[in-house]
Length: 121
Image (cartoon, rainbow, N blue to C red; front, top):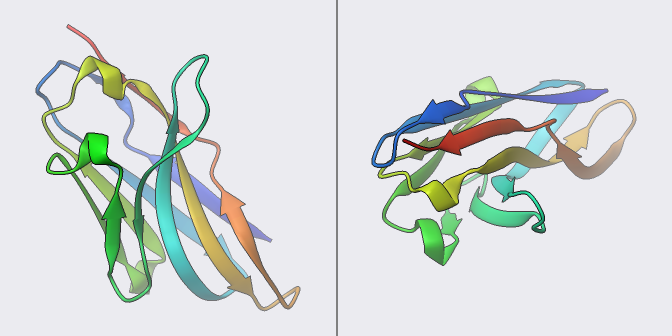
């Protein structure tokens, strides 16, 4: 079985920074795209940023220039560096990965349980 475990959330003041991490473990053959989504109370879950296995990235317009997604393929880990945080960035942040597993031999999306980011003074 595959697990995605996020860390790094917390309370930060407006203008501050946080770095989220998400490590994948289990019977992994290959990880394709990895990404971060977020969901604020009463809202749908939206894409924040995504990174391919080759390092190509894409961002939601609301975070361009402030957030940076990166990954360490050797560690099966994806990161989200969040700078110049705003109160509207407050949400639960979820890690997502498209993973091909060895046992069972399959490919599908996996989700982490989420980590809360609160931006408030």
